[in-house]
Image 1: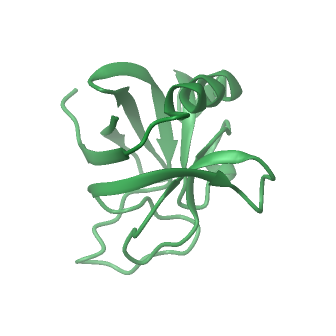
Image 2 (image 1 turned 60 degrees about the vertical axis):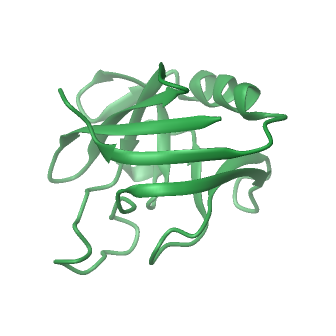
Length: 135
């Protein structure tokens, strides 16, 4: 299964994108500020992960105590998850899922996460490609 996160809006405090499952729109995303780590230093807890393709597994999060998607081998990052949340204050480099109906915020985040996990369960191989999208 292939996930694609197309980042669309690069704001000073957050990044908005769209998540696709096998090229079908699933939900919107909210992340920390995008920084090109080849040019500037990472700001801990306030930097979106680099563009690229990463392997994804479902594993139990120690922080959240439940099954969540985890991105593996992200340069300069550890413990990157896809999880629910409503504002950039709910992420520390992770990808939040939901619907972007209000500027810089998500709604229906738990629903978006639950439906995503249901689609990812029992998949042998999951990858996510994170790229700049077209508006």
